[in-house]
Amino acid sequence: MVLGKCGRILVCIPYMTNCVRYWCKVLCKRQKTYYRQYYLMLKPFDDAGRTCRSTKVKEVLFVYSFVFVWIYQYFGDCNLFLNAFRLRSLIITLNDDTVMFSTPFDVIITNTLKLNVEQCLLN
Image 1 (cartoon, rainbow, N blue to C red):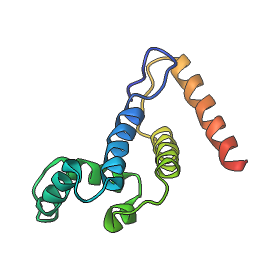
Image 2: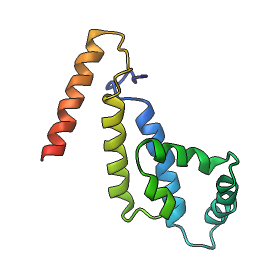
Image 3: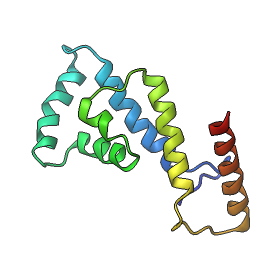
Image 4: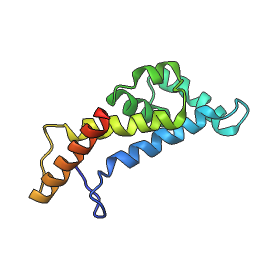
């Protein structure tokens, strides 16, 4: 697990969230825009089993249990979906038992993040 130096935030979560955010923006565009047409051109390649940009987004969504979002290509409100994605990716990443921490400080930060996430879920 890679942690950023400032604030000790997990580096993978903002990276994956930015990829999914771009995908959400492309899906929200009108049919005639260049980005939407480019995406619609690449999606059949992904459906056929070839690797392209949309394949990486699909893999991230499948890892974090958003399979139906990919299948239906619909997510409702973009901000709510991104918040749910960010929260679920944080929970799954922090609950990964195979993660090894380098210092006791990292363990304290991770336990604090787990408690904050649990408190957010309870409220």
